[in-house]
Image 1 (cartoon, rainbow over the protein chains, first blue to last red):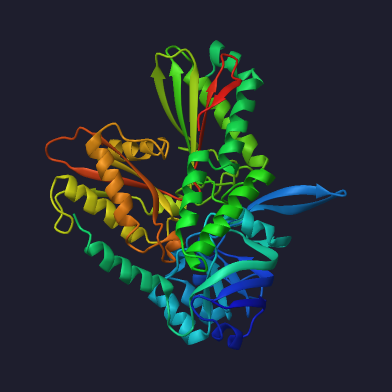
Image 2: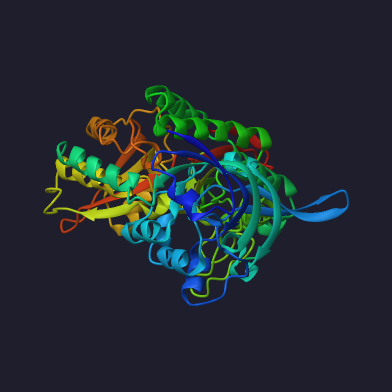
Length: 194
Length: 302
C-alpha cells in the first residue's frame, strides 16, 4: 500500500497512476455532491462550479453558522462519506460530461462507474464511513455553498481540505476491491449454509 | 393537544434540557459496550491491512467526537425515541417537549438537518415533520419515565431487509432458514451499512411488528446473553459465520464483519413466517436516561 499525497485539481495521469489499495491524502478543494446534485446534473443543469480536474465528495455535512471576531461564517461539525451506490446510475455521466477525476464516498460503486473510471481516467476513493470527526478535522475551511435550495445535506459545499484520508478501492485499470470482496464472501458464505 | 397538564409540563424547561443533553450524548459519545466491541475488533485485525486502518480511523473518530462534543457521524439518521411512562403520564406533552429539544439540538449542531418531505424533497430544516422524530411510547408500572434514544443512519437502514420463509435459496420455516436469511442480508449489505455492523433480528410477527421487534433488539446491551437458549445460539452462530465471510470493516476485507447480533421472536400467523433484519452501523448511537418527576436526569442507561 503506497501512501500518495495529492492536491486538487488533479490530472488524468495522476488519476491513472493510482491503484486499488493505495492510501491517498488529498489536499486542496473538494466539492460535496450527493443524490440531488447528481440528479440535477443528469437532467442537464449546468454545475455552478468548474468540476474539471476536481473530485466530488459524496457527503452531506453538518454545517452551522458561527461568528468569529465579529464575522459570521460556515463551520463544519461533521463530514463523513455517504453511501455512493445511489449515484451509480449517474456517476459515469458526470465523469464524461464534467471532467471530474474522481469521487470520494463509501461502500463502493458498480460496473457503470468502474467502466467510467477506465474510459475517462477517474478513481474511486473510499473514506471511512461514520468517521465524521476524523474527516471534519481535515476540512480547514468552508469557502462557499451552491444549490442550497436542495437543503443543507444535499447542497454543493466548497470545502478546503488538508491531508484528507482515503483508500483507492476502484481504479482506472478496471480493478474493484468491492467486486473482489463480494465474490470471495459469496463463496465463503455459500460454504457455511446451515 | 393543549390541555392544562401539557401546558404545565411544557412550561418546565428541565425536561427539555434533559432531552437536549440526551441527544447531545447520544450523538457524540459511543456507548461503552460498543466501544469495547470496537476495541476488541481492532486487536483482531492484521496490522497494515485496510481493515486495521479502517478500525484505527474509527477508534480515533470515537475519541474526537467525545472530546469535541460533535456528532460521531454526520448522518443523524432516524431519530427514534423509546419512552416508558407511568400510567396517567401525559405523553402528548412529552412529545411536544421532545420535538422542541430536537429543534434545539439541531440549531446547536448535535443533529444534521435530516428530515425531508417524501413528496417534494424539501428539507424541513429542523428535524421535525410527519413521522420525525419517531416516538414509541409504552406505559409501565414503574413510577418514573425512562427515555431511550437511537440515531440510526440512513446507510445502515437502507441495507436492512425482511425475508419470508420458506425460500428456495435459504430453506424452510426453521432455524436453519432463519440463519441463512440473516447471513444473506449480511452478504448483500457488504460494506454499505458501515460495518462492522450489529444486527437486530425479529423472527415472526407481521411486516410491521417483525421489524419493530428487530429494531427493539438493538436496545439490548452488546454483552448481554439472550435468556432464550435457542436464540442465544442463533446470535452466536450468525456472528461467527459472518466473521468468516471476509467482508470485513467497511467491506474492505478482514475478520470483523459483525460486532454483534441480537434476535427476538414474536408469535406469527400460520400463513406467515417473516425474518426481519435491522442492520446497525458501527456508529451505534443509542443512549438512555431515567428521569425524576421534574424531568431531571437521575441516571444513564448504557
